[in-house]
Image (cartoon, rainbow, N blue to C red; front, side):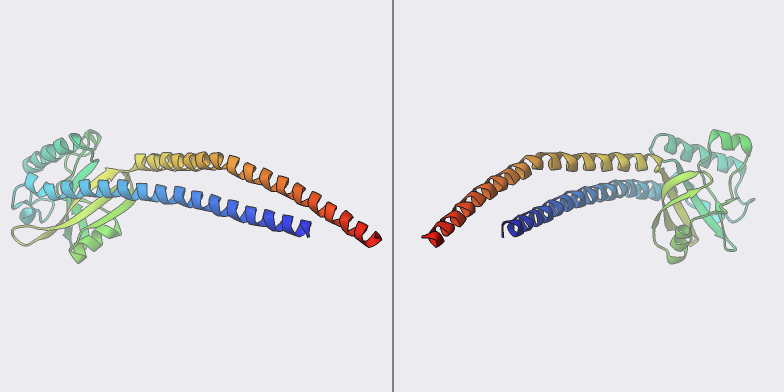
Length: 240
């Protein structure tokens, strides 16, 4: 009987410990996910603001005239490049640009251009965007903003594509990219903090478990002594 009670006790204690550890680990995972959602939400708000502002940096009819590689002069391209590059350098964004569509293909119409790219190639107006994300194409076709995490030949980004309509009725995409390379490091750091917090609470729960375990052992010993006395008393009664 004593062995059966002891087995039940250890089973119950094990279940309680497992439930407690599961709750702590679940909280750590949930906390990390919530932190990730918060960071992404903040980035998305910034991306929307930046992308919506590009049209105010360009001539009002620019995208009505951006029909092919020869429709915009190099002087106007450089003027746009200076404005957009200047804004990017003063903010947290990596790239800001607009895209136009022609015969099912997409082209940069007013892109950010780095110093190295300017050395490699004189003009970047109407440069084809060959590995455009599928979400950008959906944004163009469905006429609604799309966010996406993607990698291309330039890096790893969180981006937004907003469909805009020029005064002449031409649809184009206004886009902004945010470098999220550091985001993975932040999330890993946050996960480590969550794990350490979990271990902290686990550590301080050990004294309660040990005290309870010691109490149960003491109670078991007392119960055994009483049981032994009852057995002896029973034997004495039988003898009498």
